[in-house]
Length: 199
Image (cartoon, rainbow, N blue to C red; front, side, top):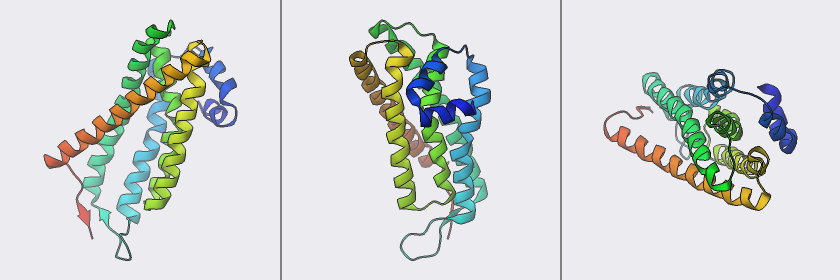
């Protein structure tokens, strides 16, 4: 797992070819990669929001209660695990349009490795400062998009121009999934499952 993560940051083209050549099961991928890396942003956010807090202007730091932060941590963790599976399912469905024939497992593996920069970028939540989060979040999103556009043609073994269209479709669905998760959060907050602040 770790050597692929390092390879995706240092030489993504070559790393996608290596990942494509491996036989990986969904259960093994979740146990060795997704469950571990998806914990980085949620644990970081839990620590950052309960121990450090964030300040608005020059006021005192605002923090979350531990029980409130734990609820949000669990829900966020489950949402990330489900998000990888949903994106893998979409990639698998979309592959037929481009005459690619990856298995569902391969598509989930691809989605998981594409999301790696987002998971690692979650370390910024240890210190929940607006500008730090924006800078690191933007960098993580940009690199995730880069991995997607570089990886689709290699991983799916399709021409680059088709890979661009395929990647753009995947990116659009990823944005829709993100908006759906935000909407679900708003609905849950309206039902009383939301943050409880300490000032």
